[in-house]
Length: 172
Image (cartoon, rainbow, N blue to C red; front, side, top):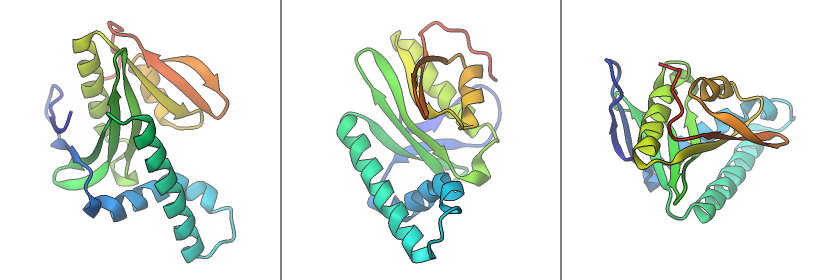
């Protein structure tokens, strides 16, 4: 799905491009935003926090690439500025959103909706379900529900959601 995401209607230009080695610092900083609340609770200095974030990011990235060898790992670019990451694995029976993370300044502006709507359209075109894991405390869970995703498995801290092909979309 690399390229320009063209949902209906006007708006900002949202593009996807493959992750390159030059994106590492951006991706580390992006990942750190997802761990900021919990890291604020530990009495570590900045160097220790950064080392922890780097280790956790590298482990997560290696795991996702190992588990999704045919997945696409893209940087989300909004109006020419790196804004996030989208990882998608197109499987035989489903299109799995492995990760969607936006920088805080790009959250709540419809970018995630546009990205997910494009993934759902791709799934629909092939007659496949769209799936995603989400932490139960993640505010994006509301978006996923509005887009027609349903909880199919409770994994403790995570929920596994599925949107069957042919499910009506309710978010705009």
